[in-house]
Figure 1 (spheres, rainbow, N blue to C red):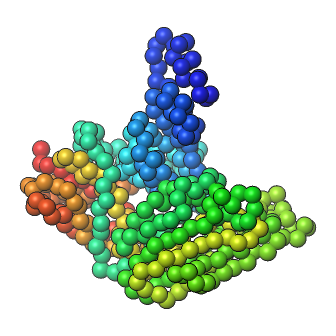
Figure 2 (figure 1 turned 60 degrees about the vertical axis):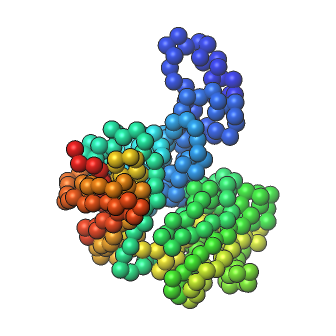
Length: 378
């Protein structure tokens, strides 16, 4: 939509329809003309991507009109669809994100994900609250486990290059991270480096996984507090093999991991690509770093909703913990826990909050993920 298209549409439309765009909102004239925004994005990490629009602090209604991952290794499982729904419900968007790969849903019997989410919205009273905003809720577990995360944007200029990784597992500004760390080519300014400020509670590792480079090659370097810590070269691919592994003209996929082990405390870790062209980073893994449970939450005057997930569900073990919810006024509250796959209520109980102190709520055993509400009794 051109910058003046919004005004033109309004002049032609006697029915006063709402005007929307999926284009970038960086152009002020475009942004001023639309009524709401529905972004389209296919990032490495959908949960990180959901944070992008929240971090932009937009002053109009928005949601993701298309969201999914081009790197979904098992679309039949519905795992990415599940993250799309529950991550966006807990975000500041005005509606749940729309999962783009709809052909996977009915053919793989994945409609139950939508049913469970709708039951949660109904049971919690989510739509009755008008002041709901994302809030930071922390978890405490007996042991710390791996923290895994990926960039919130794909081929796009990085909004940030400096990131703080809190002991809670929250990565500040993650939505502004680009998955493409640029080498010394023409696009260097898009993402010249990444710097992470960490605080390890005990000796642990920092690893970065790369799944793609260009045939021109790259060199990924890690520095710890300014000193060289590790590096890996992805040399140029000879002309007969420049089509990549599949022979279809794709870029080569090295599927490599670079790791620095055995350090604790506060440090700064810097990544830079000093080679010819970019590397695509599929994910970062810090082990151990964060509590075994992660929490996304949204709160209002009389209601808090939470989505709590196991950071390492592949391990096959349930995790229990304590959720610390800030900002609740003193008084009695109802806590309900719901299975996010079946929509069945697991348990309900009454708890009492005190002024000025976070409300501590014990979780049930969590194998993959669970949802909860904390609200004033009816």
